[in-house]
Amino acid sequence: MIIDIITLLPKFWKYSIKYHPIINKAIIKKLIKINIFNLKKYGIKKGKKIYIDDYQYGGGYGMILKIEPIYNCISSLKKKYDYIIFLTPDSKIYNQNDAIKLSKKKKILFICGHYKGIDQRVRDYIITKEYSIGKYILSNGDLSTLIVIDTIIRLIPGVIGNIKSTYTDTFNNNSYEHPLYTRPYNFKNMIVPKILLSGNHTKINKWRKKKIKKKIKLLNKGTK
Image: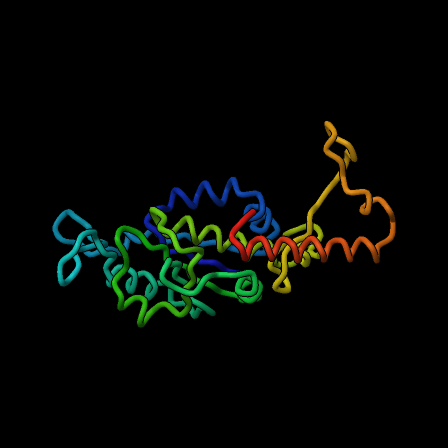
């Protein structure tokens, strides 16, 4: 898989890629290739200054990313992407099914937002997929993009040692993960449920399903 990223924070990606164990492992194994493109290199030159943002038409606070630098960058790449993705809070909530679908693609481009927003024409005519990781605001789109890339890469066969361990992750099959326990059995009088040591997998699976249903019920109520 090839992942291209258009960003104003190339150093953020340099260190994120280097020190993120899953991403770094996938690169070393040559399962993915990540290319970083600094948007400032494609900005509009006026004298000695380079502009990648401007004031918004109609008035209002905050600077807007211009369409020209983004268009110029993508045009220079001369690539055909499965998706050109933009992370924004005012879009469809990203979920595990989306991660599964994206993990099967060959070539994806992410445009990382910044400042107040991005020229709407980029969203209307250039971007082909939009997602939101939640109804809240981050200081930049690089953070949300990194989260999405993490969810994609871990699903690529060969990245995680045992890919089957991802099959029961929370949200796979529209469900949640059951409670998990490991040794020691008794830690400071905090004890593992005895059913899990019974060896009776029929009863264990029934117990796990019951716990998942209870978790869903509590989450629907908005409680822990």
